[in-house]
Amino acid sequence: MKNLDLVDRIASERIRRLVSMAEARTKEKNADSRKLAKRYASLAKRISAHYKTEIPRDLKAKICKNCGNILVPGINCSVRLASSRGYVVYVCECGEEKHIFYKKRR
Image (cartoon, rainbow, N blue to C red):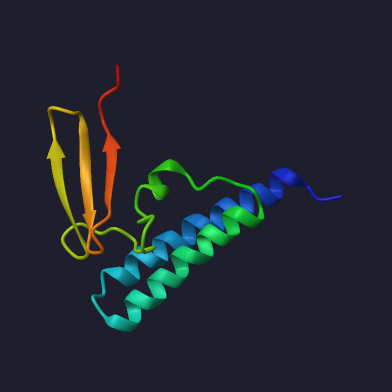
């Protein structure tokens, strides 16, 4: 029988490592590096699905749902603040918007 806590911990470590490697590759601004970064992000999603562990919220906010890019402000996404609504908007180069709330909703 598998030790589920150990499997879960190892899967989480691998996901964190893959996302950090993908972020580093995205910052290189190279076409091949971008492809590799997308591959790392897709592997992280596959590990999460296979071992039924959630990608942590801070890491999930860095991945575009539409194209799978790692969002790095100034390189492949723009950031703006919707202060009246209480969230930050990340707009990926594919056009997808990601809203991250910083105020509690009523």
